[in-house]
Image (tube, rainbow, N blue to C red; front, side):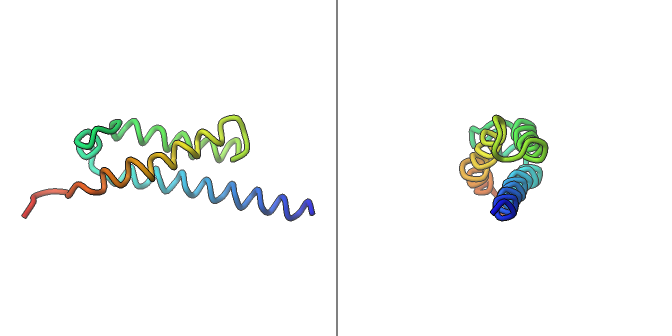
Length: 94
């Protein structure tokens, strides 16, 4: 039974780390003016939040004092900020 728990916790930790890394890479690829235009925090702020979330999950795991808030921050980016900044088009409108 202990092996199953170890496997489950590592799977959850890797999934959470992947989620935080995905949020960071996505924030890295979005244009900086889109964040301001949509009334969100700036791009450097979201890069810092998502990078910190990935580091916290890597260092402390998912089930820790800081792990759950870190994952919530990454989820907030992916659910709220990403759709808003993804809706803006890059470059010229023609």
